[in-house]
Image (cartoon, rainbow, N blue to C red; front, side):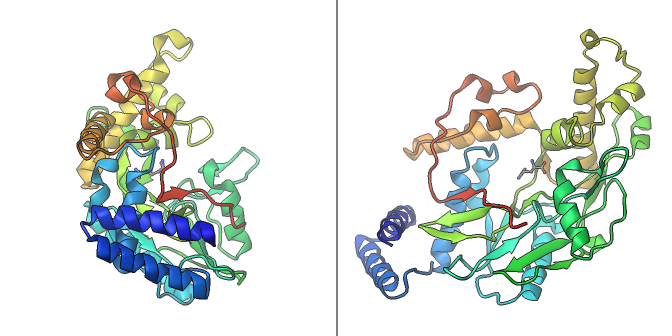
Amino acid sequence: MNELRTVAKEFIQLCYRELGKSREEIELRHQEIEKSIEHTGTYKHTAEELTYGAKLAWRNSNRCIGRLFWEQLTVIDKRNIENEEEMLAALIDHIIYATNEGRIRPTITIFPQKEKNQAFRIWNHQLIRYAGYDSEKGIVGDPHSAAFTKECIQLGWKPKYGMYDVLPIVVQINNQTPKWREVPHELVKEIEIEHPEFSEFRDLNLKWYGVPIISEMKLEIGGIEYSAAPFNGWYMGTEIGARNLADIERYNVLPQVAELLELNTKTNATLWKDRALVELNAAVLYSYKKTGVSIVDHHTAAKQFKRFEEIEADQKREVTGDWTWLIPPISPASTHIFHSSYDNKIKKPNYFYQKAPY
Ligand code: ARG
């Protein structure tokens, strides 16, 4: 509890200073929080603290290259929610608001904070994600979803055994039975991947969804934990073209792409993997643009990150970062990030992994 006092105080200092509040206001709020912790063991953020705290957590996310836009986060305060039905409805609303017909809005929805005997959880890794099914010939769909897909089936969701089946949303409050709901098909923006020059690319039947909404992490602000606080930005193309579709343990499509491009795959030295990667990534960017769904290429994203670093330096704030995550998975050395080093110290507020609920 003493620790909570200290962390809360630190957060209020930082938050209120950056918001331009007076020493009196800071002192008043400190006292209020002290009293609340004394009487209840915890405290509640004002709407303003919650909003700014969530933005600070983004600014402090060492692995994120997209942090230039931290102030533009839309914060949806759903701390008044009381049951699973309301929670599921709020998550559907998040998808609609964030998707915005393709002009993606960085958004976070925040559910009630963790308490001694209260925890709100979302079981999904992302609100929109493709299922992965065990089969004799290996996993069908996204291997990354294999364990969660099993859970969904156990909860009564009917498997479809396709390559791109959107999983249902599963939520749980405390130790109650988890509740799930299918995301209405028309709300899921999806992008079929085609190539600007090679029309046969379409025949690979590759696609991906528009909005990555991370839903398994907790948000920590001033010692308070929000165990359900799904957030999204827009994709950087390489996340899809160089990882989700390309990784051997994911969709593993490079051999198919190479065949279509008639590359010689008999020897590594033709660089067939690299050439397939580049064309696949060009196709991803082209298709998202064509469909009118926000996306950023890694060169532009790196430039935006440079801008972020400059602004932070101007503000006399240190930028922390995780180099291994900040460099893009293709042509990393063509960005300034590769040639820089970053301190991977964890600043709070921030987003953290938490133990899987299943
Ligand atoms: N890398 C994850 C994926 O491919 C998404 C992580 C968040 N990405 C983002 N652009 N906000 O699904």
